[in-house]
Structure formats: structure tokens, C-alpha cells
Amino acid sequence: MEEQENAHLLEPGLLAAWLAARSIARGLPLPVPEHGGWRVDTRLPGEIRRHVFSGPVPGISALASSIHGPHIFIKMCGSGEQLLRLLPPRWQLLPGGFFMSHEGGMHASALPAGYQLDVTRSHAITTARILGGDGCVAASGHAVEHAGVFVFDRIVTEAAHRRRGLGRALIAALAARQRSASARRVLVATEDGAKLYASLGWQIDSPYSTATIA
Image (cartoon, rainbow, N blue to C red; front, side, top):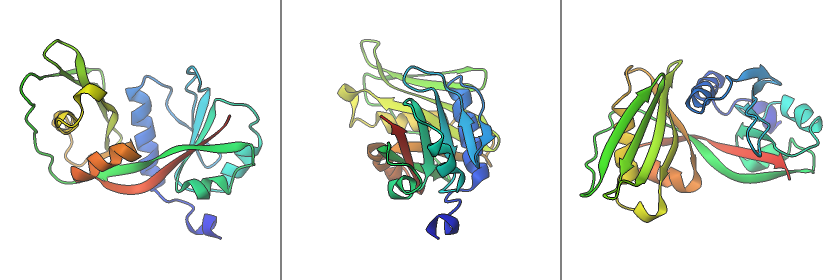
């Protein structure tokens, strides 16, 4: 069966390290192994918890069958079609993304005139902001180095400031704070974001699919 042949579309250890670093970046509880994947009890508005899997493992079906209410998300490395085949009909797909990684050098990128970079560090979290001439936040993002990965998280450029190279400059500024040369740079991107990252030398390791009960 395809589910058995592709039980892990992404190395489980890499996914676990990314998920732990992402939880640190967002002030969430660390992931707990469960059902062949990991559970994060987010307890956020609109999200009770999420279950994350490195591929279409059998535990997904049993888990999904035990869930009957909204605000619980199943996320899996693999296509939406692969995920849906493991779920009861009450589940529906949400827009997907991509798990991506980057190797090699990452060069600094100059800011356009009128913008200023501000980088701070609080505990394990590095935060970068690019400020416009009026002091507004034009772009922002976070990074955490943990368990052999350097994770980029919540990289956002505001609509009025896009197509000016701010995303490129933001990523480079965060990457410059990486301490271990052996730490693997990883992130999860939306479909639009993946285009930017691909232009910066990032590669897609796996589709990243999400489903929930409406």
C-alpha cells in the first residue's frame, strides 16, 4: 500500500526538531509523542490542539475517527489526497503548504532606502523587524535554534511593502544569528511563500497538508 511505502515522507527526527523549535518560538507546550506523530496542546482561540505526522502513518485513521468536534487539526507531511484517504468523511482539507530546508551560504541583503532593520533576542527567540520611515512594522519574523535545526517562523511582509526585497532581507538577517554551522535551516511555507524561498535557494522536502472538522 502507498501509505505503508511512504510511511515517513520526512525524516521523523527532523520534523520533531522543527515542531519543538516552532513551539518554543510561539510560547507553546513542547510536542508530545502520540499516535505515531506528535501532539501540541495549543489551547488558542480556534485551535485546541494539533497532531503532526511525518507521513501517512496508520495511527492517523484511528486518531481521526476518535475526534468529532472542530478546532483540532491533523497536519501531515504528504499530499492532501494522501491525508484525506486516512480520514472519515467529516474531515476537510485546508490550504496546504510545504516543508522546506536550506543548505549552504545565505548572503546579506541590503534594505531599500527608507527602511531600518531591528533585531532582538529574548531567551531562545530571535526577532527581526523591518521598520518603515514612519516607524510602522513593514516586515517581521522569528527564528529559534534548537536540537540541530534553525527554524524560521511567522515571516510576514505587510501588503503595502511587498515586492521590495524585504522578505529576502529579513530572512538573511535572521540567518546571520545562527550559531551552529551544522544546524539545518527549516521552515513551513504557504504556496505563495514557497515561491519566495525557492528563489533564495530553499528546497521543498515535502508537501505539508492540514485537515480539520468544520
